[in-house]
Amino acid sequence: MRKAFKYRLYPTQPQQKDLERTLSLCRHLYNAALQERRDAYKKAGRTVGFYEQKRYLPEIRAELPEYKHIHSQVLQNVIERVDLAFKGFFRRVKAGQKAGYPRFKGKGRYDSFTFPQAGTTGVKLQEGGKRVLLKVFP
Image 1 (tube, rainbow, N blue to C red):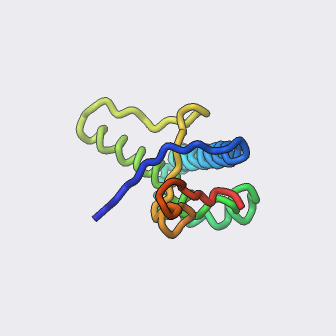
Image 2: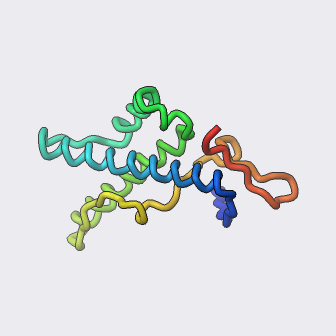
């Protein structure tokens, strides 16, 4: 059984800054993954898949210190979103529908990030259920 919970957050100013920084980094990663797929196909005629891009995440985290503080599963979900965008595109092409090639995301077009295993990856519901604790940046 799958469960999903959605909470309205009321962060303080420093918390809001951390959340915005996380969103910004996730958006940059999304756009970079999309660009990598486009370039690979245009220049070499080959496709880059989800697992190939996911394999580079540890290197990205090692080379770019700003990504070290974002949970690995959040970054994996960003790559998964790119993969789902391409799967949807190819499904629509195959069905003869208007396809809509995946687009780069601007600041207002990437507004969420996901903790796939919320209980173990940085999201906890405090006793009493009045507060959600997010471990976004240490």
